[in-house]
Image 1: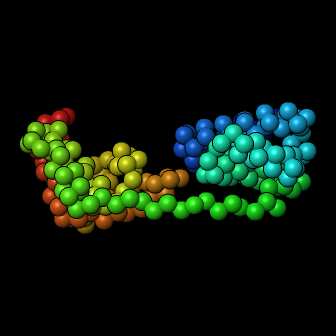
Image 2: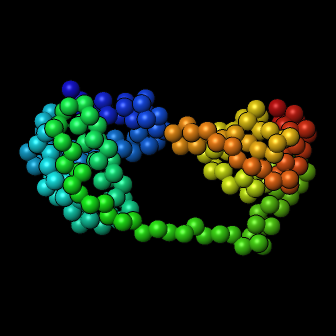
Image 3: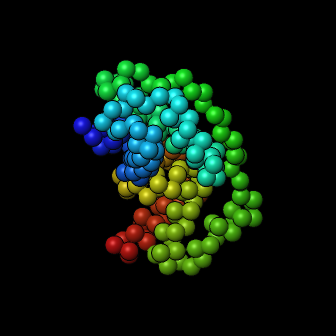
Length: 200
């Protein structure tokens, strides 16, 4: 059985992860299993994967100059893969459970200054339909704090002008309601009334 393909289907269908995340996990697992093959551990016999193989793989990554965050991501993929194999009965226990998680440095996001925000919100400039649309997008992003990926997935039905909110679907298709400020509401309403019909 091809456990890597089975794991990818599990991520996509059961955990409902995005295609991009599934591809990243699959790439990490493929790299790890190729390394295990060089150690004499076949993909058909995952029960032979032990802590030693995982440590050697991580050491190899670090020797190649990968950042701590990249190594941590690959270890996370391996943990998930081995947890899945354990659940499916392909291995008796997950050897990665005994490995301590390395702490990733937390980086604080850089906030824009007041002048930068003002310049950004006024960047659309003209009164063309495209400019009105762009201004509504920027106001919504600034007001609600939603992710760009969430913004792209919005539909007109997700906007509630009377309430001043938008319904967004985040990672794993989790639904949440994000508040929208009065300036953003005004910009969106103008877009819906004037710009959107013209663009359509």
